[in-house]
Image (cartoon, rainbow, N blue to C red; front, side):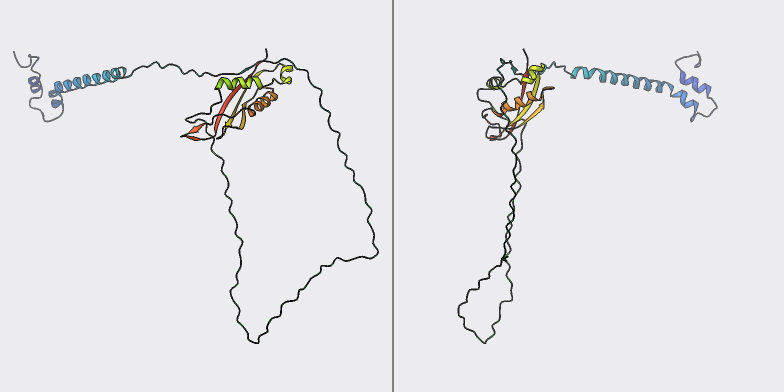
Length: 263
């Protein structure tokens, strides 16, 4: 069998085809390295495929799905029961407006006009010895400049929203809700109009535990009287145990929602 009829002898075939031709470069080199190039391309394809599989497979092993429990915020509200209607006392009598009376006093005409004069009283000086010698005086002029006191502007203390030790009402939150529900009055205008809703306010518990600045964040719609009543009751709160930051008493914001409900 000749080298051309043997399929495995591709190199011999290339030499037969390119006999008596230029074999340094060109088509002869491509034919001669064909099998080598095919093997390299196949190996690269296998490696790329393995890398892609690893990239898609490894993240699924490293990722751990954790089911975290949902955070439930317990928002407590104060339900204010409507008190029995008390008889409305008659409005107090308004004081009558005062009328200012201006009396006209005729001027008094004097015959002899007396001019006001300022008397200058000169007291006699003590006897002094007069000398004929000229004495040189002091050329330096001493001026006393008044001292101006510098008053530094007092800065307001920082009001904290959250501290390590929050303010505490005597008896806890339940005692606070009970105090507000007992001392608050449902406005008559709101009852007559059938208005109900929530009033969200916050106030400052100072370093001494007293109630300071009060802000209505969101009032009852259509009922400014309800907001005023909520502010009034908060002003009457007894002293808190003040909040502390790093062991030092500081002013802290305290939030309180109040619910006005008609039953």
